[in-house]
Amino acid sequence: MSLFPHRHLLGIEPLAPAEILSILDTAESMKEILDRPIKKVPTLRGKTVVNLFYEASTRTRSSFEVAERVLSADSLSIATATSSTTKGETLLDTAWNLEAMKPDMIIIRHASSGAPHFLAQHCRPSIVNAGDGAHEHPTQALLDALTLRQRKGRLQGLRVAIVGDLLHSRVARSNLWLLTKLGADVILCGPPTLVPPGIEALAPVTHRIDEACEGADAIMMLRVQRERMSGGYFPSSREYHVRFGLTEARVQRAKKDVVVLHPGPMNRGVEIATEVADGPYSVILDQVTNGVAIRMAVLYLLLGGQSEVQA
Amino acid sequence: MDAGRLARTLSRIAHEIVERHPDLQRTALVGVRTRGVPIARRLVQAISASEKRVPKLGALDITLYRDDLTTMAPNPVVRGTDIPFSIDGVTVILVDDVLFTGRTVRAALDELIDFGRPSRIELAVLVDRGHRELPIRADYAGKTITTARGESVQVQLQEQDGCDRVLLLEPEAPAAKPKRGRK
Image (cartoon, rainbow over all chains, first blue to last red):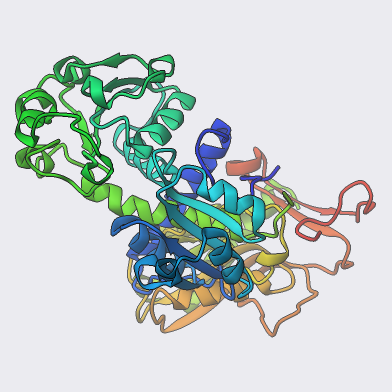
């Protein structure tokens, strides 16, 4: 049986729990490479990966690039601000032109939900979703799960609070899928204006952060995504911090060994207080290291062996 | 080869290692996953029974260095390498269960060299069954047997298979079980 019988990684929603676990286990095994004197293995020699980022990114893009280099893949990063996109080229035309250069994989981040799925239907290379609109960000959810599992030894039965801008967050959606598939107890929390309608069907929702933090094993903070906000979702950053910011006092309501996660970039003093972000329960930098390991595992599982799945 | 024979063979290899390397502190045994690892552990135990100084122990997963990765479906499981010491200037003895084509050893050598510069690398195997495809030989071989190419040599160990023995299996009909790793 194949560990991961897919050609693309478009989201967490279509994955089976066993497939998610095989990505986590592979990442756990590969993490050691990052501590070697020579941080490179020849696994993906001769494979070409295109990083196509239509949105700003520091962590995701650089960690994909590190993962590609560690596995000896050749990579090509396209920042759309300096590409022909600014001249009006469509996504599909860009993709077809890149495809003509024979890459084995395209990693795409795009402001529109479904952009990676669209490419998967029209292009030959493997597609990895590095964040599409407010839909999914699968590798982020995987690295969060890896971090949680390392700290807690399990995911099953953990009480996890996901707090913040649920409306615009693809990180929240991917995490919600992943954590519920693996048996964690998720509680969602955000201001009423930032909770998408219908999400209560997937997990309980509260508008009080104190309630969400109560007895939590982990608190996942979401970034307030100002760049996606056109209207007034809340009066001011200060007001947001007072009502929904994670402060020391609120962390105290959670279990003693609670861990605090944040996908970055953080708005210190808005969704998270500085003393929490730099506090002892913060695992934010572990998340970054695990991000490289997860992306190595995804590259290996999609490009390493000969693909059995043709569609 | 039964359990008693296997134990005697390992203890003989352990003695040969001690004889050739009196400076055991500058020696490390690195098992190649999966069955090389318990064999290396047993060799270290056998050495520690008679010697005060004990060689270091490591494990090597060569999956990411395989030369047939692109032809394999599905992907082999990555189990992780664990060498918690510097190998610079150390004599490293690679340990595996069966020496066949030599390709696993080639991959292990490449991987090991990415960890540092050992003063010397040697190879210990439980069974050498011939049919080399690369210029590689064992420094310590528990048993050398003549086999046909299609046959398979299976080492079973208590730690993983519940019993200690070595089996020589007849070639199976290709229809019943397609050769692993080829499409």
